[in-house]
Amino acid sequence: MLNRLKEDIAAIRERDPAAHSFLEILLLYPGLRAVRMHRRSNWCWRHRLFFMARWISQRAVRKTGIEIHPGATLGRRLFIDHGTGVVIGETTEIGDDVIIYQGVTLGGTGKDIGKRHPTIGSGVMIGSGAKLLGPFKVGDNSKIAAGALVLREIPPNSTAVGVPARVVKLNGRRVEPLDQLDTPDPVAQEICQLHRRVHKLEREMELITMETHEDGAGI
Image (cartoon, rainbow, N blue to C red; front, side, top):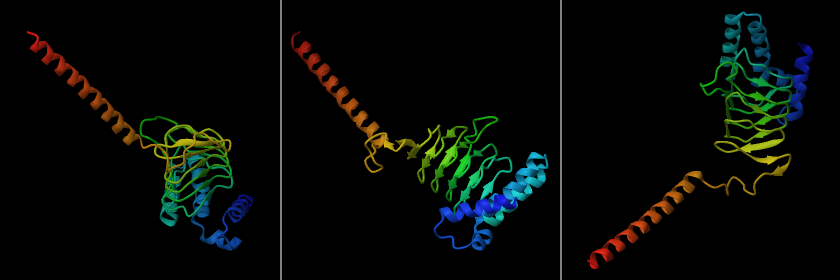
């Protein structure tokens, strides 16, 4: 346990330029505290001490603002930065060297049975406020943008943005020549299609009316 703690603190110092000392991280970083408490609650959960496991996890919520279900599987060197509002569901699996920012939800949709929550590969970064809902996988070394809503699998080495999220980079290359400002608005596109359809129907009605008048004039 001591070696894991040293490993976690070293990983935080490497990734967080605001960290000044070992002691500061140990005593003042809620993400580290939440992960440490989860290890105890997960041990209880695996040994079927369910009440004790939930008691520890709920105590961690009160102390850190981070809710990790005791059944979740966390990899090594997980860094939950700031962490307020982070929720990690029961069947979530997280690989090594993952960074999670505040407000992230790794949850379910309410429609699945058994495996209900995401599987996060190693080296993944999940931006603040992102919501990942469902039993899909996020591939190794991928990045989920802040505020993204992810509902399906994300391949390795990719960047996903938007609501719902779409992959805009894969293996370092842009998938489509668009940035977030130039991305088409699906609602606006649908309205334009409706306008075109209405215009077509109006034109057809005009032709029918003209033909009717011509037929009447010829009688």
